[in-house]
Image (cartoon, rainbow, N blue to C red; front, side, top):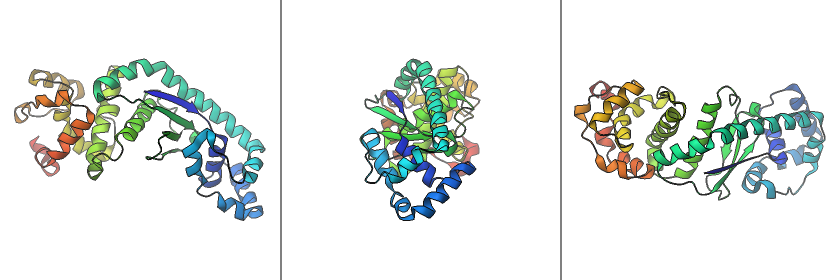
Length: 278
């Protein structure tokens, strides 16, 4: 798993043009550009796709508006703040990457061979975007709460990369896939990284589904019957062990295999309308 954190002036400028303004100076700049260069402005509406696709190799057909933006004081200020945010994200990754890679390998059991390029944008733009079909694996990244909790931000990055790797696998069972990714990254990887259970975190709308999958996820992690009690106590997620025969084959599959197992057996596993019987 290799991650490179970059910036791209064209992508940053595009987001300032087409995403909601987060300060008056940006809004005034957008109004002025649209009034004076309306046709050129709207011609750039979908150019983020090409920038995100090619990143450093992107060359605009018309760089008039970009050049005007680049010369403004507000852009220079935002660029400096974006560079600072890039250094912040780099530091989180550099500090934790060795341990994260080791834990990730234990949990997910498949390698991420390609390099991911995180193109950092200003956090006030509050955006994560990527093209699922782009072989260059470029992701634009800037969330308003990135600096509130470094580890949570790192988990969100790893979750996004893992989701990218899973791609359209079992796309007809999207909620199951999201729940398993949440269990693997947000919960188990983070728990092992910090040494305290983080199973209360994750997508609130998937909480009940994740509770249904939790016993099988423990089996996937390699838990025998005697281990299940320790996990339940650690995570404060009790269930009736006697109702769950150990599926020993799960400890020998990767995350794709586990997702496939759950999807194929979901009518026996998922009982959201009968949760009290777990």
